[in-house]
Length: 367
Ligand SMILES: [Zn+2]
Figure 1 (cartoon, rainbow, N blue to C red):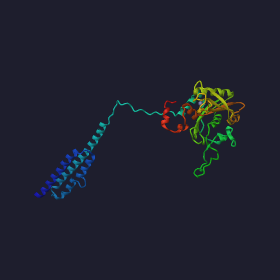
Figure 2 (cartoon, rainbow, N blue to C red):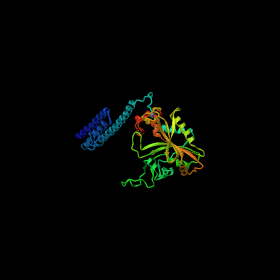
Figure 3 (cartoon, rainbow, N blue to C red):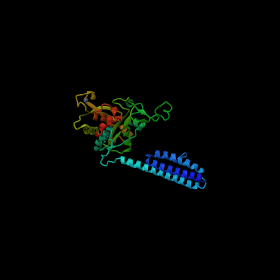
Figure 4 (cartoon, protein in one colour):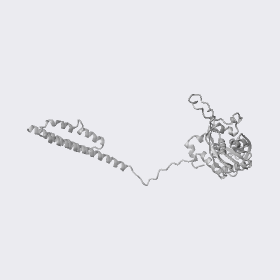
């Protein structure tokens, strides 16, 4: 019996040693990985306490329950100790993080990046404001437009030579692109080459007296260079009333030029041609670069053309649903891009659409 008792005593001593050694080491382990390694070393499948329990068979049956109970107590106690140690480590990490995460209530705030209007939009807003003062309201039309609206109703029939003025971008016939042979849609739908079709829409929508400003994006098949883009902006104006005249048109545009470019801006009208106005005129202002004597910017003429205008053609009034014997009107159209280049002395149209922040940030002042 004494041998058996010795075996039990030896096992109990071993349990006590494993328990105290593990507990001591546990307190010095700095991280969760170390805790897990120790847990495997002691309690794992090949752990020291697990191996010890396998030797319980050597203990006399009468002593087994006592030794087994002590060993299981040791196992539970160690498991609890491991869990508590992990908990403490996690809390310590958190408080360490908080201790290092300095929150300085006196630090200045981070500046919020506020965007600003694109120079094109600034000029467009100025135009809206100037013409608003003359009683114009803004009226907009679609960028995808029918052949009928773009040309025919504006007195430009299919065989009219002035269609050559517009290198139109047609919308493709459905399926023709996929088939590898793109061709214009049969209904002649286009990306509008000018804002003039909006005149027809305005006349058909609003009742005279009509005073509308029609800004918008236009598209043409252009070889892109410093002065031409395939995508650009126009601003069109239309007035229809019972008693309007070329003198009214002249007055409005001269006032507009002074509001836009300064009180001493010189202006002149030259004969022009547009199929949808009769008579038609080109409107020039004194060169903004040289002020008169002539320079490369004005083609050495001293003048810069900023828009085209004229009295609305009777056919166009009729197509807008109005009787030309009862109503007259005038219209004008200008390139917003060109006005923007002139105002800021920008040498290349392509910069406007470049999305280059180095260029755009120069206009953060709004003008
Ligand atoms: Zn000049």
